[in-house]
Image (tube, protein in one colour):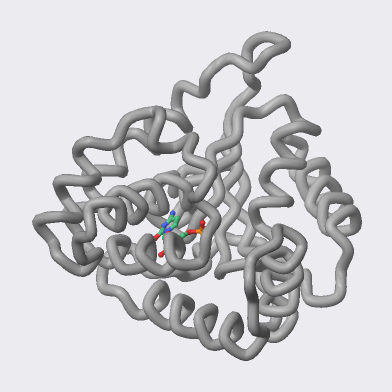
Length: 215
Ligand code: C5P
C-alpha cells in the first residue's frame, strides 16, 4: 500500500504522514528532506542554488549521511531547496530513489513494512500516481506561518512572523508555478484543511478515510 501526502509548506503534512506510518505499519519518507539535503550541500560550498550545474552535481552526489544532517530544517536551507527543486534535471535525478522507496519500502524495526507513506509536493501527481490513497493537506497561509514561527522560536532560532509569512508565500509561489512537477493536488486527492484542527484530529480524520476505503 502506498499513501501520498502532498501540500504546501507547514500545512502539517509531515506530522500526518509520520503518524499514519506509525499507525499503519508503513515506512515513511519525507521527500522534502532530499531537496533540503541538495540545497544544504550547495550552501556549504558557497554556491548558488539557482546554478543548474552546481545543483545537479549536488543531487548526483547525495548520500545517506546527507539526509541525516541536523540543519535541514533551517529556513535558509528550505529556501535553497525550493530553488533547486525548480530544476528539471535535479528532479529527474531524485525520482528513482523516491519511487524505489515506495515500491520496495525498507523493513521497520518490528519487521516488514506493509507499504509506504511519502510526503512532498508531487507524490500523488508524479512520484506515485498509482498510490492507493492521496491526501492534499492545506491550511491558510496565516495559520501555517503562525505554526512555523512558533516552531522556530521553540527551537531557539530567531524569527519574525511577518518575515516567515513572506518567505512561506514566496516558497508557495515558486513551488506552484514551476514547470516540472508543480505543487498541485492530484485529481483523486482527498483534501484535509488543518487551519483549525489539532494534529490528533487530522490523524483521526485521515484514518477514517483509510478505513472507509478498506485499506
Ligand atoms: O517539505 P519541505 O518544506 O521540507 O520541502 C522543501 C522544499 O523542497 C519545498 O519547498 C519544495 O520546493 C521542495 N520539494 C519538492 N518536491 C517534493 C518535496 C519537496 O519540490 N516532493
